[in-house]
Image (cartoon, rainbow, N blue to C red; front, side, top):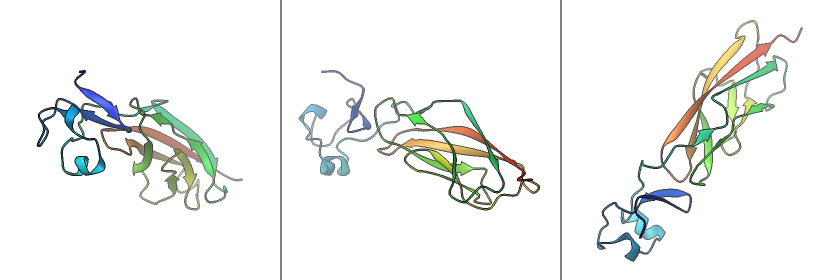
Length: 146
């Protein structure tokens, strides 16, 4: 039997990890109850999601309508899990939003190029089923509507 990290339902588990009540993970029924009872625990040995670009840059006019998507960040999980996104830094004024499932970066507040001509956001990609996460930098330049 192969050992080490393996994908199961999009989550990464380590078959070498100790189990409770069973000497081999192969004899454990992989059910939600088994996982909840700590029979198999997630491991950080899984690779993090990988962004399609090291950094992203978007430009937007200050008179753009609220909720307009100005660009998309994209990451994939090498293990095939569902990737979710959130903004972790650079948005103290809550001017931005990121769609949790598709990575679309959208306008969340009125913009003013004279006051804030650019934003540097940190966006995190994490696997919904658990495991390590990754971040990327998004630079948004706000241009004058005049």
